[in-house]
Amino acid sequence: MAKVTLMVEAETDAYGPEETAKLLGKGEATIWRWLRDGKILAVKVGGRTLIPEKEIERLKKELGLPDPDNR
Image (cartoon, rainbow, N blue to C red; front, side, top):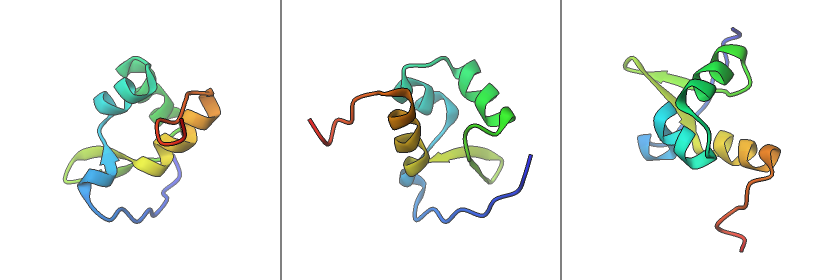
């Protein structure tokens, strides 16, 4: 896995794998697999894996999921 530096303003700007799975309508195992395979960029903070909100927005577009902000 390549190391990438991401700037996250606050913990509220990122979600754990369980929350991400709910937001994307996928299983948590799928999110972990995507993390392992490099499909999702994430940051490690104090042992926690966090997925930035912008990455979740990118995945929603890729998966063709509706954006609640643009109804």
